Image (cartoon, rainbow, N blue to C red; front, side, top):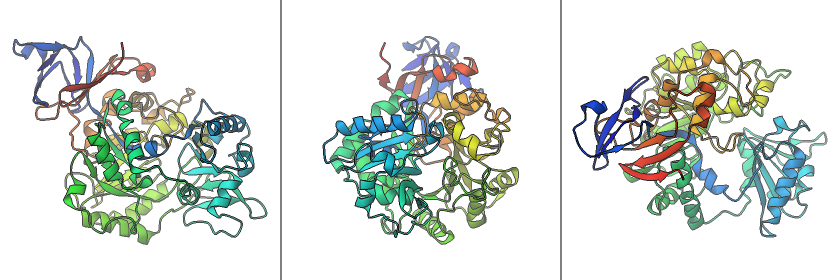
Length: 525
């Protein structure tokens, strides 16, 4: 099958182009100029642009499945406390009378009230049923009084390690839950969907990913559901087609001592384990060297050195990656201190992935590049794009490009990926690849504010961070290139992302997605 008359971004590197390629038995066997193709029957792509199948290497499909029955509380749907209460109340009316009322995505930095919801606010949704709503960053949440009662949290309850129950002047919990351990103390009290329901929900994500051109994902906290490997493998049998690399959270009591070869291989596999060195900038729990503006706080170290090292030893022993959430510069420095001089244990991908890298001064970046340990980085542009209101409060300046310094990162030899973190972001379609590409190229927030023009990269460079360069970061089973010998996984676009004006890149859409030479999704005409 010859595909011709196309603008083909091969993913082999910036400015790598072709106009035709041939597929045999699901594999690309030739790539080149259409004029050099043999005279044979061909699929004429009408001059459209073709990319390798796209990779989102830090996202949360397990969480998307687990939260499928939660109310959408993201902006622009919810932009105030009053609006949040209204949406949750309406959602509760549609749920069984004994069900928890759950929502996700509020962004209090945009609320005119200037604060997060409290138990008193959420008691207006329901005083009798438990109410729990996650903040957009996924690191904080708020619950009502009934949920606090069910969880057994009162003024005598100690804060979890690396997290806290926010309290009023008298020490009573306010219902605001800061960081994951505090959120889990309430969230874990909810009834869980059973295996079959989770499988059905994951299968329901198939069209979402294929319509976005995403053929491979890394789930960076797959343990939000029980037995994620079994769930995703059963979903694959039932029709879920993207490749999935799973990274459960570090829990020595829940993880097996030894992973067998079957768990570490295949289209659905366990690829690593995840730890959190710090929190998030939006709630000032990212661990930074300099105090936050108008504050003496520098964030939170969320895991002890001993636990971090134990997670690293488990990853080494089992031949998988260690993924470390490290947003702040102090968190990154601690990772380097703990692991930088260790011998890498993997050959084909970095032994340690650094997630969300936000502040990385030049001297830290040099240590990451030049140390004995082999690191890779997954970062974002959608955070600054969607959450500028929170970032401008918590960083001294974002216009100089120090936050998410893509230009400096792209200039290193490190495996590097852009990613979405969906649904832990304040944007309803955070895994729209072309939104992230536009934000990488023009470095502007959703409201047009300059968020670091000096750190802009080119369209070609940004596309490699969703294709070939990203594929070097994790064992997703594809080189994400259009090259001889690669699986024929590619997407056809409705506009030329390579030439449209920078401020129109986010309008580009996937027209077709192909897997192993088979068209598996097409936009309605």
